Length: 575
Image 1 (cartoon, helix red, strand yellow):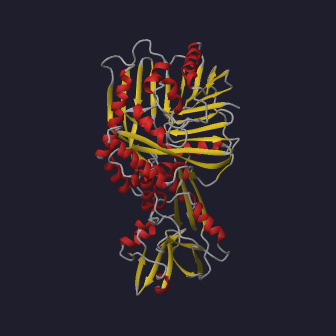
Image 2 (cartoon, rainbow, N blue to C red):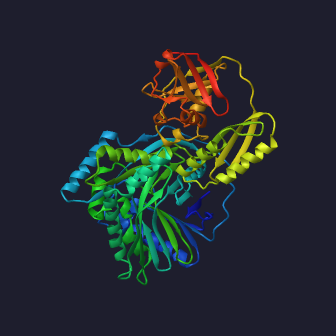
Image 3 (cartoon, helix red, strand yellow):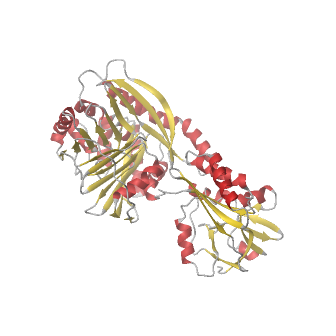
């Protein structure tokens, strides 16, 4: 079945199914004719929804260069009589293999340096250079899309099932929005990673906000788009607003600017696309020479990636995204492709640009898609020890992930549960999901047999990304380690690739060495446990970098958390 779901501007989805016709072409010389057919259908009262591939630029402006051998139609639009109610979604499975980059790290960095030399020679000012990732894909692409969409918060997201291919776009970038004769475009240029803690996140926000390099990169694209708009806009109507605005996304901060214009009378969609396409934010400046450089360096066609996805209503109003953060699934070949890259300027460093491209790929590489914030609390005699500390920690995590959150509602949920369980001792598990809200459950705490046995992890753990500092249900690595442990093992002790001790999967670590209680520092990438923080503030425990060999020096080893307090453990395996 051919169907399309448009999820733009966080509004109710526009869902299209059962097209009355498909307008498409793979020939550059037919691109303009196809767009005119689309406009004609819209004029007859139909909706149009689909995409224009990056390589369609050659059909709009023959002087522009693109990589040969495109793998998708240059233009593809479904023509629909009406919108339909979105289908009820059933969660169905999919499987992704490990991703592989089509360009090696040395080649990518060499090409960045090549671009810098072109800039030095005055051939270009900025080049948006990209590469592809590929993986084997089996299962239901829509399930992957529905998981990517809330995790990335891309306000110009869309899912297109065109038959053999499914397109999953979670783009945050507007290409253009047309309402009557008013046209708005909103280029994105300038990126920095999100912080692992609230303080680091704020520091990185300010770093991007005041970055001269990123502002220079952004204003180059603004000038390019203003010039493009000038070809189709009434004189004096092109205005820039919200220059260098910063927007938050789960893995990155993004710099944007907004440009508005009034179209000349009689301008049609062919003229709009001819003037603006491809968007300058994914080419660079000047467009003609820069696209020539891109075609010389990039190995693979971009196809719909870096093109535009959108819809046109029967009134002629339309919205199209810039198809970044966009995956393409070929259900016959069982393959998924994803593009990533960045804008290269003279100030760019090859290593830094490669790291930025890899960072942008993390939205699909990590698949941190559907998770909840989690708090585990001790409820004893109707009372929660450290009640406000738990509330503050969940509030802080919600702020970092930019989730709407009510700490008052959290308190109400917890206190309501406590009133229903005035006697006994419980472990209370509170979850908060950005869309589903709060859920709560409790189990009575059972006494544990002593000694409690723990095991050293069989592998080092990478603990240097934002999820390490927040208590969430994203615990695949922890669950996998626990499932491999023998039946008598209570928990697993984690360490990093430097053999530095980190924490347990359900609590923090404390060693007693020479009469002092020491615990690893949070900056290594571990959860700032509520009970750990209390002990630290009371000067009962001290922070110290601990290695595996320190286990031999320890008089006693403890697992601590706010549910069970101090739990002395015995290590089953040692190096």
